[in-house]
Amino acid sequence: MDGNHVGDQIKALRIARNITQEEFASRINVAKSTVSSYENGSRLPSYDILIKIADLFHVTTDNLLGRSS
Figure 1 (tube, helix red, strand yellow):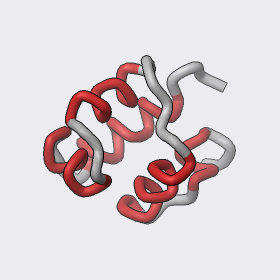
Figure 2 (cartoon, one colour; figure 1 turned 120 degrees about the vertical axis):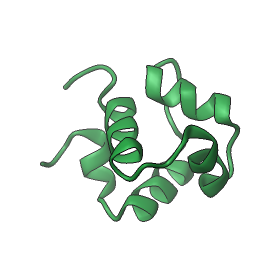
Figure 3 (tube, one colour; figure 1 turned 180 degrees about the vertical axis):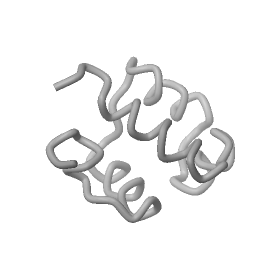
Figure 4 (cartoon, one colour; figure 1 turned 90 degrees about the horizontal axis):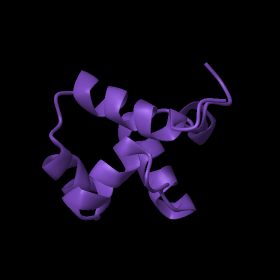
């Protein structure tokens, strides 16, 4: 599994939906800098945030984690 699969997935899903980092951060109730950290791989989202992200993008947490296609 790619070391930053979660961050790559988050960024790809966010960009595909034309959502800015700032708007995305607001929707999942974190700081914009936190979203940036997720996307560049320096930080991983907590379980609670991972679930919020999956719900927002209508994907599974397994998809975000690279465990399914």
